[in-house]
Image 1 (cartoon, rainbow, N blue to C red):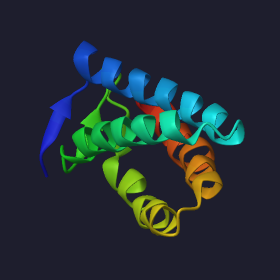
Image 2: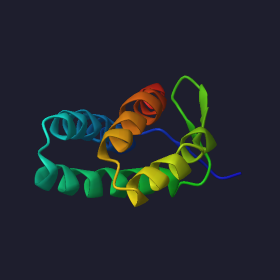
Image 3: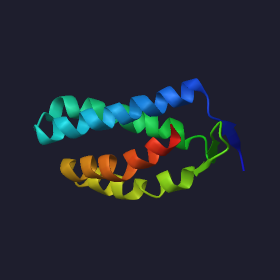
Length: 105
């Protein structure tokens, strides 16, 4: 299984992703769809970067976080996207994916 060490750049990607999720959630509930779609594309790109690692992040304290926990949430996110259910997209990002990302930092 491929592994990488958590470094400052990876930490920044995850922190940025968490901030984007928070902004996206606010925009969805304010019905600012045009801006929220741009954020969603950015969110998906960053998730793709993280998932592209294909394995486990090893944090400096040797605490392992399985990337598969994150990838297991993605089919529901894709279903919500295909159904244009922006509220569900926001909820999945905020309440399922964001807590997993917060474990990384």
